[in-house]
Image 1 (cartoon, rainbow, N blue to C red):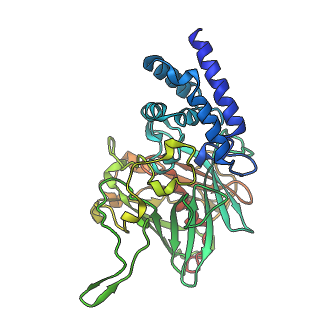
Image 2 (image 1 turned 60 degrees about the vertical axis):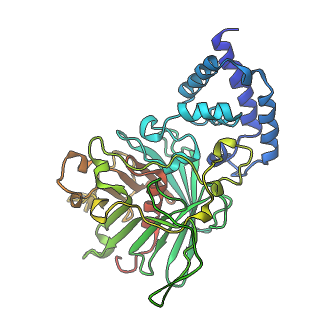
Image 3 (image 1 turned 135 degrees about the vertical axis):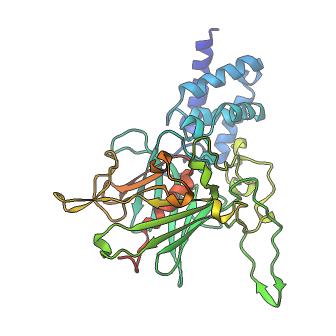
Length: 406
């Protein structure tokens, strides 16, 4: 049998799994139009069948070569679901795929769920878009598959707006059907103050291995002051603030983002941002059929809220790029390179702030841009050093009503 035949036969077996059992959201493989998650039992049965097939017993060198070719050839969605299927066959295949599949920083691709927590590509913007459902106050993030505005996209994350008496929460989940903090697919949240001018992004797990954490205690007394229990999985990773502009709703908003978990050196040539490598066990309990998503990490309840070890003066600070006034159009303008088509006060571009130190060419690079293209459709493009999760949370802050700014 030729090498090409091996690849084709393997794809055929994975194709049957994908069509019948893997047409699910990105978090458990990929997304279907109906947004319905298939039963894990059917996926388990098909993966168990693959475990008994001849592909599992391939010589290691040949197996690795086959998997490398699959990863190289299936470089876009939906064909990339075959890469996810490979990782779910057995432990051996999973370990090989973890070595082969590179992070978005290197590959520019989103493959596994953990990719959403990893920094984007260094040299280009990863193009995504957000769809808003006004009636249910939910927001859905998709990976753009082509340049067309009618692109159906690949589901990545979902968020639901929850109003409280003194603040507003945006709960972010890997599952569009279960957007709640109690869900095993909860990955974080965005919280605003009452005026909608200050926001905090919380991650459900430590942003990187260097975070010092201790076991959660119910309460403790310090100088007769009671420190309340902080729910496990609330790690503050960024703060966003909006400033009042003298023109009100007619003028551009002024944004200021402090990325607690990212050093300001990350935007410099050769700079490094922390990268998560796996989800905690509690984040993947709903996907028992996909062993790739399991982790030997300790459980979430062994952590409590904490901050990164980066000094405040060393944190990355982002600011919105100042627009220019267009006399002929009589409006404020930014160059979105065709990615934004509708004027809106929500539109913005974020670049590194001069507060990070000596300004250089890298400080003019757009790290995140967000803009309107339809009634409830917005583009979201991001790159290193922020992740899709961080970018999504920042963009959600633009949707919130800002009483003091407008």
